[in-house]
Length: 424
Image (cartoon, rainbow, N blue to C red; front, side, top):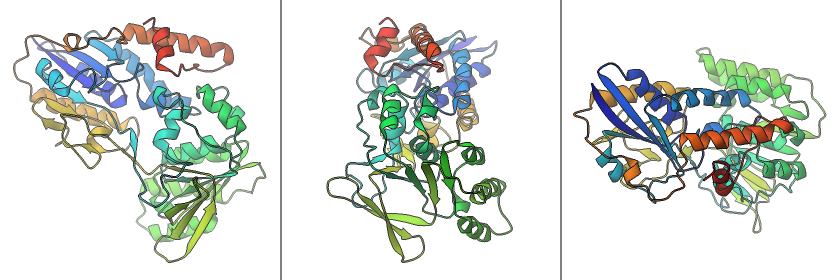
């Protein structure tokens, strides 16, 4: 039997699905030792720090991750960072294959004047802030204005808008960070505009997310009927199934009897942001009608952009256009890439499963003779490495802390607190 060592850098969905694919490819002739390496003290990536807290069902995939982690031959090395604790070259020397699964944590910019004003930020900052990501716990989010604008037409934009427009007590039974719940309860925001550059027929929302919106108990959801009728005309007879499903869900919202809640979530389409104005901080956003000359502005104190993500460049890894340079997941030498770092921020969590399976098949087909010795334990010098055992302690402590509060878990937010829960 041949036994190969594979290092996976990044403990999000793409990393776990890559590990699962390798476990599935094991046979009587082929075995894998998998070391998963993660920068944060906690695994699960966006399942922990990206999925909206009021969508707990999506997080149930973590049970699959835990099953993968408890399969013989798998080890977790969390709280270990590429660049400061080890290099890609050190991994490539010691492992038969190295898989990059670091995701796309950086938000794309609009590239318009005023984008750097206080009160303008990316969803890549706001989302991890309310999800208790240690690196974003101290962000100062100013919620003192009456109106906020969210720029984008995907599920992240919808999550952000919903979190701002919900009655905050609805978040009490969720695992939203305590600091975010407190801030949202003090929030003065009562209207949130989701602004899309193109028409409704091009929106990247998914229909299940849209169908949930009318169920919001304390929030008006407004879509103008003429926006949808115009989109249906533009879409024509050869309309794709997903687009039709989206537009059908939007029609339901647009044709509802108006409600009179204190909070409103409003969609606008065919509006391209061209400038953010303000004296030292955001005061208004100037838009131009897409495909036309008409300009209009919306007074607001908070602008959150959700127009896509990109991967930061990694030392020793070829990089271009916001992702790792690759051919079907193969980078160079014994280096591979999966997930958003490979293909950009597209698809849902499950998309990473088939993607990772394809790349791991390619990886296995290119293996030569196994390397003789060495792994990451030779490289890491500090004693604060979070193993699977430590993570299970952290996980159990958070779940136990949430139970008396009726929450799925009460998240620890700082690295120190997380390491303490893991007895490190």
